[in-house]
Image (tube, rainbow, N blue to C red; front, top):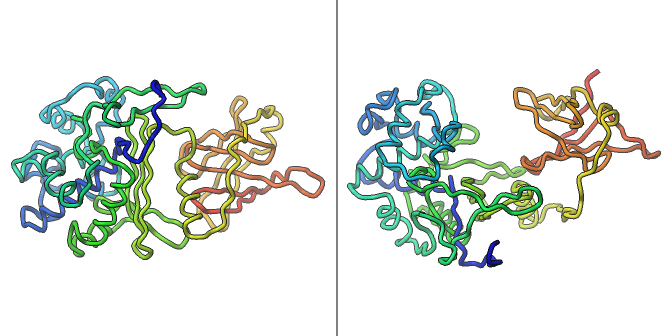
Length: 386
């Protein structure tokens, strides 16, 4: 923003957790070469980590290890812009109490893929950037994909921003020694679609390995996430680091790859992706009114929307309640989220791409007993419980 430099096809972005797909692909290559298996124990490499003797490579890949994600701690922001050695990061991981016992449940943890990145280095007696280049970027001609460092705008690397108080604010940079195999890579949308297409064409790993990567517990595979889109599923990952937001996925049945990279967001990524995919798959899509503005509603008006609502098609309830001058929604077992009014009938939680829309009768009176919840391409009717 400072020099008004526009994004081009050559602009390179930090892709955050999409790096995990690259790390997973290298791990499966090492499995195919006989260096380890999905059942290899973490204790073979880092016995000092709690439960290491029960944690497998598979548990690290599909977030079933129970290892706490050190990047979730509030103290992370005390040091995230400064270099950390491998030994310092291992100490952070080792000193953290496990969130649960291995294979007990699923919980996303960046520590899993930091460790997988280290394991790649231990097995190959090389560095992660060297193995990334040797195994992925050079053989598959990903010329704009590499192990990131300090952002260099003069090299066409995008700085990252947050939108605050109606202006773009440049963000402090994660030092890339910290995310390592969990979030270190820089790339472009063109390279990301090439990467995921090569992966799913079984040019990067074997079909057997790819099937193991795709095995999911609803969402988490081994180095892949599964994304629903109406009656289809795609596989890929999304990423966020500093102000950068990214996404890549592949629809195996349709042989379609989609990638998105950004160095600053003030609009729902979910809505953008739904729009792109609706247009591609020739599904109904209305161009959004980007000129729509949030309005103010008095507390006494907001109170009319309060209540608990249920749906016949979604197994959860949503409670609407007013706190101060804000209407909040809260789904079963989840945290409350603020709803911004854009009209008497439309409320949005834009970060998650949630729209709650009431209707009016023929006389123009708001019908407070039902609303439609729209998210991720779904449209669900909710009715007030008596």
